[in-house]
Image (tube, rainbow, N blue to C red; front, side, top):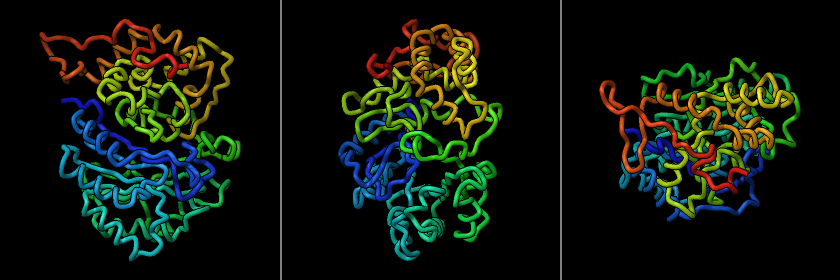
Length: 379
């Protein structure tokens, strides 16, 4: 059975106990948007019914949930078929190792499987490196299968903090996720991403200071699209991990406070633009856009696949071209979806296409490129 929502990411609040200058979703101490505990339980229950295997608590700062956090973790473990949970935190709560260990053990006993500790150039303006190290060690020692330092840095020599500073604080040579074997049960290490100039970072990350790669080094298809669905505390729902998408964009798929997840996701899985990003990829979309408008000011280097996506998704001219003319790529998107996914989703059930003599996966419906989204959320 193919899950309609493999991962549900709950951005439980925009409130945070720090105010990083590069924050994509504009989180900070003055923000007041929250999900209620009942709303989170309902979203988790819906996701479990739709095949989710993982729930991510993020924000803002999700540890501000206090006692609601272990209650929600126990609900996932004891009352849903969901098998895994993750917490994305800045680690400010880990003032001492002993205090961090107590919290880490409480959350672990409630069912938490993975701890991601956000760190890097801008986080450490507010959170001491010692707290990051305390959080990492406490979670590792408390038996978490996965403990990951999720670092965001400027280009080498352009910032005040380098990955080696995190390694020195922790006292370990933290390996990157790319070198972590999928066949081991314990994964402890650090990712080294880039601080990007989006959201609040648009006016704070210095021009030319981001870590970048050549276009051909950036992955094209995005595996997070339609796989990691994010519910925001303001009601928006987005079709990816949600790190930069508090702003209106083509990644928004509706409002979870107004509609249940199933119809939102059924429509999203038939959305041409989202399927284009997932199956043909962003390189194909970029080439198509340049053929339509050769003067689009695209760059040749990008910090990540998210940077490449954001350059198109947030550009008004790109948005209008995609909304008005993406139907030209419908047949190719459908062919790529059939070839790469080899599955068919039908409302109410998941059906694998038979290899021989059976029904072939159906094409996306002959509808406007924006099928499944309200016009006001596309424009």
